[in-house]
Length: 269
Image (cartoon, rainbow, N blue to C red; front, side):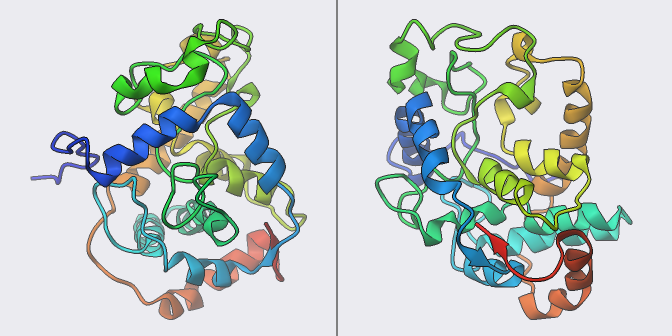
């Protein structure tokens, strides 16, 4: 029998995962996201890929009910599953780094929800800010806690956006997806294909890629995005296990691939 993943059914209101999403829904407003983008997208903190992986070995994602291992172990599990299936080397690298934006906790703070103790501004399923929150959000009962849901400018199905504007024109809740996407977009040595960048940017956008929401905001080209995400999601979700990997051992295989697509030297966060 296949293990059930993303099982939130038995969580209580006091559970850490539930509290995480309550804070996320309450605090992740359009204004908050715009402030976080200005604060964190400075690209002035040099940190190499493997140093970032080592730091991520200290972080456990409090939003994930399936796994209580350091996040780097999930990254390796995803990458190794992609490798086992003989998928392209760039996709293997994406599997290895897709959550690397969580290193934000190194310079984050409790107030922003970007610390080791307060992660509501860093991890979890993301949603669009600036328009109504859909019932496909996990814990939809928390939607009404968001101040934007009581603002006529931001509480309609399209909100501040135009019909058919497309995913790339939307502002999502702040988190590790968008952070890593922006960091790599500004990294001059990055040659990952567009499919890989889309996998990084939207893999936590469950209300869209799994819940089917925001149809009025999509454009035809987003259909290709959905195919890429669903392909990648098999490795992001269904590879979670208790198996542990040694970071130094896997580095020998992945380092040449990383240098091929990201170059040598530090990445600026």
